[in-house]
Amino acid sequence: EDKMSNSAKKEGKTAQVIAEFYTKKFLEDLAKLNIKKPEIIEKATSHINDYIKVIETLLEKGYAYQAGGNIYFDISKMPNYYQLSGRTEENQKIAVRDDVTHDLYKKNPYDFVLWFTKSKFEDQEQKWDSPWGVGYPGWHIECSAMGQKYLGEQFDIHTGGIDLIPTHHENEIAQSKGACGKIPANYWMHGEYLLIDGGKMSKSLGNVYLLNDIIKRGYDPLVYRMFTYTGSYRNKINFTWEGIEANSKALIKLREGYQKHLNGGENVSCEIINEFEEKFHKAINDDL
Image (tube, rainbow, N blue to C red; front, side, top):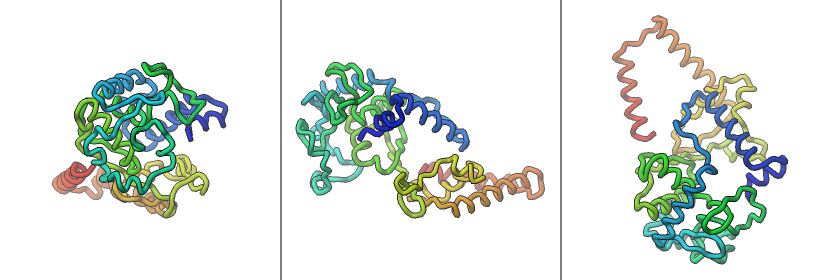
């Protein structure tokens, strides 16, 4: 399902209004968590012409084809397509999803769409003109095009959730390699899932928490940030209110220790501070 269109219909709003609402909330939460904003914040919908240019390049180089009104990426033309996930064609077939086989225009069931003029969403709200007809971009092309535009053909670190390794990031690599001959990033680092009380977070279970829910319970929003530092980004982390309480106490203790040091009560020598700072930078530069 197209979640954006569904939300817009339910609330009687446009997809753009929904997107603007959540963008505003996201930026507000960044500020509450004292997280620096990126130098560049751009909307995917502002770069349609950039996607079209990359798709045209892929068509010219033979990595893409047109069928049934859509433009598809031909994964058979990309050697080592499964390099990021380590999957194979064989174990892909075992785990085949129903929706993969429904598109009869694909040469290969795992080819993916670069541009839609025909899709299962009949009333897609946001559409744009293209050389192939009125439609909208596929789910992966924006990352390749925007990455090249703002970071260059190759940059250092690419992050994302672990669920993006198969399909999304693999497709991004294929598009970028096809268009400019380079893997877009040198390092791919993926964050594991956030669990809630040992299980999945979901609206149906009623265990979806927002930053404001933590604030309403009287906690400083930085307590949540402190909580996220209790584990490596590559390991699942389990949210519990007991954990939030424990990290609230830890944050208070950290701040008290810092104030004592500033006031000269428990002054720590520059040598010790420098030693810990060096250890910190060594660890963080080794793996985020």
